[in-house]
Length: 198
Image 1 (cartoon, one colour):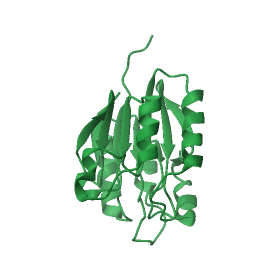
Image 2 (spheres, rainbow, N blue to C red; image 1 turned 90 degrees about the vertical axis):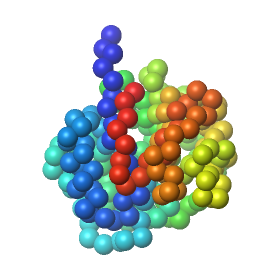
Image 3 (tube, helix red, strand yellow; image 1 turned 135 degrees about the vertical axis):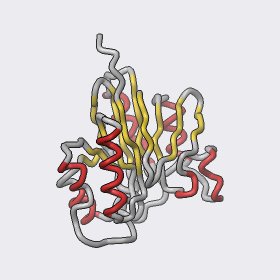
């Protein structure tokens, strides 16, 4: 059995900044990552010219993403030209199952439909290692430092399905904070990006 770890660059909250996208692509190249995961607000407030994922595509980097609350339908369609949207979907890379839940169109709370979709995706994953990617942060985590409460449904999903890793974003000042929900490692990411291995 191959014990090679999946090496990830996880980032979020680019808010349409092409310079940040280029820096992250360079970081992914320099760190020799297998996969780039973007946890939302990729375009965000700064709607503008298309192609923010092009720097990754030009370097042959695989990108998966979930939309953030500041990403809207038309922007998601643009992002899907150069990356894979895993909102309400799962993928497997190097033996690691990755489930996504986004919050596009200014959605700030997950609902029962999101829970059911996440449950169904976790049930289908055959991999022993699992990652959950969400733009929103879970309730009861250190990311609540800003006073913005985390999502209780996201926390329930983590508690029920016990992914090895939760990657979340949304709270800019929480970037880099790590926490635990039971045995799940919780990592808040942002525009600087973080290298993770699983």
